[in-house]
Structure formats: C-alpha cells, structure tokens
Image (tube, rainbow, N blue to C red; front, side, top):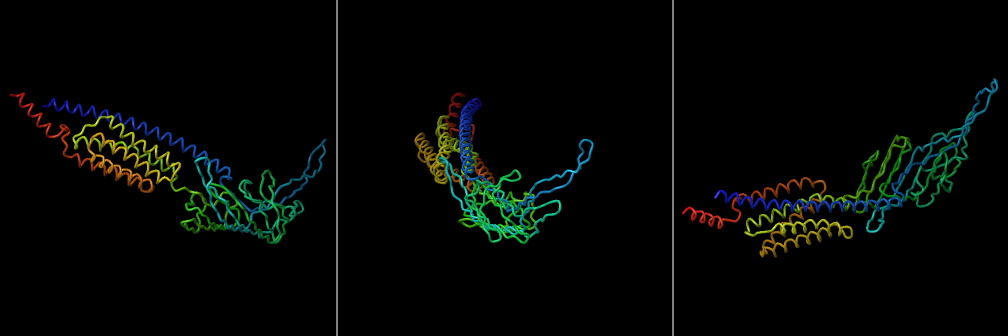
Length: 438
C-alpha cells in the first residue's frame, strides 16, 4: 500500500512538473509582451519629443532687463624703445539692470497635437507684463560714459517660444521689437532711450511651449498670477510653491509673490503639465501583475481537478494561460486607439469568456465555466481598481495576495494529497489489497 502511495505521489509530481514548465513558458511570453510594450513606449516618447520641440519645448522666460552700453577709458603707461609713454586705453561693455518690480498675468490654454497615433499636449499663453525700474540709472563719469539713448530693453527667451513679435511700451511710448545680438547672446528686445527718472514698462507676450511653463526671477519683487485649462498642474521642482492655488474641474489658478528675489538666474517659479497616470504607466503597472493571471487560473484549474473529479492535460493549462497572457497584448493594442477603460473592459471580457467557454467545453461541465468566469471577474476587477488607485496599489496587492492564499488554504484543508481521486478509488484500492492478502 505504501508503494502505491509513492507511485501515486510520483504521478502527481510529474504532472506538477509539467504545469511548472508551462508556467515558465507563459512567463517568457509575458516578458516578450513587456518588451513590445517598451518598444511602443519608446515610439511614444519619440513622438512626444518631436511635438514638444516643434512647439518650442520647455518655456523659459526671464526679464525684462535693461542693457546700457558704456565705454571706459584710462591711461596706461607703456615702454617702447627705452622710453615711457602714456597711452589711452578703452573698453566697451554693457551694464545690465534688473527691474525693481515685475508683475505677470498669464492665461495658459492647452491643445493636443498628434504624430501618427500618438498625442501630446502643448500650450499657448497670453502674458501681460508690467515692470518698473525705480533705481537710479548710471550716469557718465570722467572715466566711464553711459549712452542711455542706445539702451536695450529685452527678455531672455527663445525666438521659437514667441507666437508674435511683441511691442514694448516704455513710459507710454511704443517700440517694435526684433532679435538683437549683443555681448555674445541673442535676445528679443528693442532699442529704447531711457530717462534717469522712474521708468514704467509694459508689454503683452504671446508664448507657446510644452512640458512646463517657468519664469526665472530677476527682480527684487515678483508677482505671477496664472490661469489655465490644464487640470493636473505640477508645482514641485521649482524654487517656490504658489502662495495659493485652486484646481477646478476645467483648469486651475495660481499666484506667486516672491520678495527679495535673487538675480543669479537660479530661482524659478511656474508649473509643469502632469499626466496623472499616462497610458504606458498604466500598462507597465498592469503587466507587473501578469503572474497572477497565470498562477490564479492554474490554481483554480487544479482545484477543479481535485474536487470536480476531472482530468486536465498540461495542454489545457497551456492554452488557458495563453489566453490570459494575450489579454495584456490585446489591452496594449486597443488602448493606443480607444480610451483605456473601454480597452480594459473589452480585453478582460474577451480573455475571461474565452477561457470559461473552453473549460466548459473540455470538462462538459458548464458550471465550472461559470465559476471560472466569476474568478476572472474578481481578478480583473482587482487589477482595474489597483490601476486607478496608484497610492494604494501596494496595499491592495498585499491584501489580495494574502486573501487568495487564505482561500486556497481553507478550501484544501481536508484534501488527502495521497488520494486525489477520492474515496471511491480508496475503497477499491483497499479491496484489492484485501484480496491479495487472502
């Protein structure tokens, strides 16, 4: 009798070995799907980069500044042919002056641009800029002469970030702007004669970009107010958080007030365009749970064999597991063309119904198909909730895995693993042993 138990156990072990090999093969298939997902994500990031670059990419606004040309002259003694001479030297340069106060009122609107099947948001903005220069402008001395008539008022910004050529207004006079190159850099500005009194500046900037909108602080006192139709702004990663902000169903508003700002071009305020959980992040998170869609159905099939008195071949496990794995491929293919939630529902129903009908047909017991469909409903429902609850995904996953283990332990607590074919076969074996003894 002991030998029969060992023989029976060996038979179970061989079948489990085949099932383990099937699981390993399916995990390799899942890895291939994950590799395909990486390739598709790389194509998406490339398209996203192309859209961002064509829109001016990340917007960096700085200014306004005043550049005043100056010439410094001095006498320098030189020796030539054994004699000392006084020679006049001169140096030209630019005196850069920051505004004392800057107030920017920005209204940012987003739109979606596409490259093939991929899309990415870009933005256009209307910015009313007000600034005052209250400090005393430099005046000429005996050694240094400043030419206030040839001063340049400018913003440090890429030409590609402008949607139109702005008009600068200084002390109630308008000046057209152009790209100006001075001191080795190209800026957007205008030649504006300045007075030594208080100078008041205003303009309207039409800007565009992608990814984020940022303003580099250069004035002693800076105020930025912003309204946008983007519903997921990111305010971290900048030098200052907004003093107050409100997020609505159709956008947000924010306000910054920075006093005693530095002029070293290191302090930045603004926001970035955040996608709460983009498509490929969801797909990556989904495939991380792919092993559950292999192990759980296999455990259910094994329990069906144990309690429903049926016999399944490893091929049945293989085909059922393959349908579960192809759920992820179907989800990837569909979600690139239709909304993710709809793609998920369609792919989940396709995979679960296919496996349920297959098991019903193989076993000739349709109740097992209904049970399998119920298991899949729980499994796909858990994954869907986990994908939508990023902050609690680990918590849900831990409790779900533990709940599955407890359920399996409870269901299998009375199984005689040496006699998986049931009491009838046990009685037959005992009768055969009794006859042999006689």
